[in-house]
Length: 170
Image (cartoon, rainbow, N blue to C red; front, top):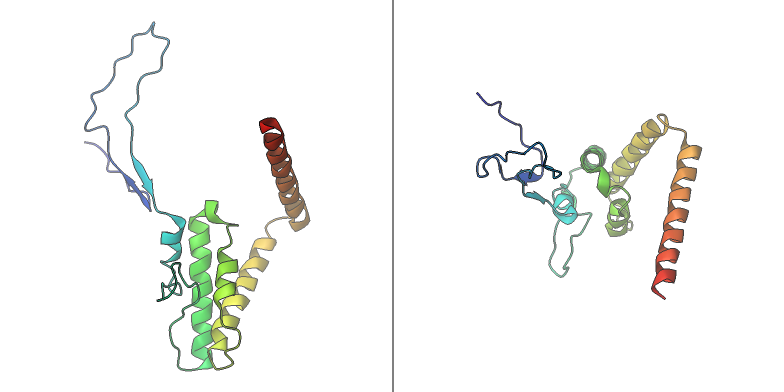
């Protein structure tokens, strides 16, 4: 009896083993056996972002608005909801490591209305304060100075690589 395989989140696969007959390889053959192919379809980043509870499409924009929170009754509820939103963002980034550093937090901060001085400012404060807590926890796990130097070195290397590729095309 075959063991059932748990599906991976956000990936649809077509089992190819049911459609393709097994390939027999001759021992003298220099080629590797032809493996059955699976078709994977990954969900786009924007599709993942729109699943955040505070991101919505609004009329008049052809791209999502990244700060459309629910209405709250008072300041305390707004702070609570802001922390919840930060946890949702952290979970999205945790589940999608390849999308970290692509400007999502910048798009959220850009779309926040900072002129709103009502109790809704608790949404912003709860959101950013909880992100600070998470950054502090993450910072304990690594040497930040070595990490940022490694990131700088990576970007310098990418710049040199781009320069070399441009130079080669001339």
